[in-house]
Structure formats: structure tokens, C-alpha cells
Length: 129
Picture 1 (cartoon, rainbow, N blue to C red):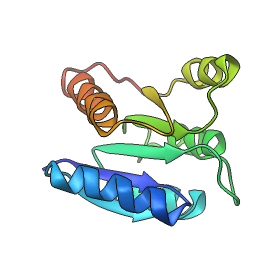
Picture 2: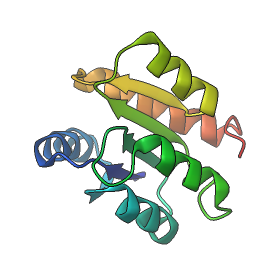
Picture 3: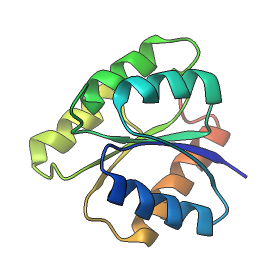
Picture 4: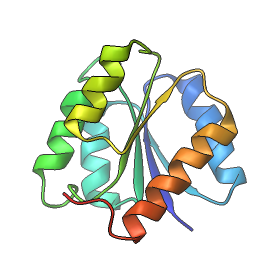
């Protein structure tokens, strides 16, 4: 069963994501902020990371940059989750190299499709650090 690290500071969002993923057989490792998320990524070695962009301590783009600069985590696919839906926000995420960008609120099926596609790409050698 694939392990997904969920870095999300809003408890309600974290609970919803956890329920969606666990129902589909994913193992979920939830953390509440970016610093915990980076540490958890190194320790847990998840198959995929769901990363909120707007967090109080460190934003998702900074966490993503840390993940990509660490040999322990640079191989892990990352999907950003955010309420930022402006075109430039999406373009910035694509430009820095995230695997996908899911806008909140999202449909459970859309989130699952994004996760499955990123995992497939990674298994087929599509994600390169």
C-alpha cells in the first residue's frame, strides 16, 4: 500500500484527505507544518507527498525547495494542494517542478486521479530529481 505524507496545517482538511486516502487503501502520515513535513519526509520515505502551499511557519514552495535539495527526498513526487487558483500560482508550481497542482476545494476523485498518475509516472521512471 502506498504511503502518502500529508503536509497540511488545517485539521479539517487533513481529516478529509486522510479519510479519502485511507478508504482507497493508502497509508497516510499526517503532519501539521512544513518543518515537521520535511523531517517526516526524510524519516518516513513516503511514496508521495501532498503539500499545502499556505502554512503559517514555512510556505509550501520553501518546503518543496528543501525536499528537492535533499538527497533523501529529491526523488519523492510532490503534489501541491492550495486555494491559490490564480494562473501565475499554477505557473509558478509547474516552473519549480511539482508533479501536480490540485486546487482546493477539490473533488475526491480528482485528488485520487492526480495521486495515482504521479505514482504511475514515478514507477515508470518519469520523475527525475
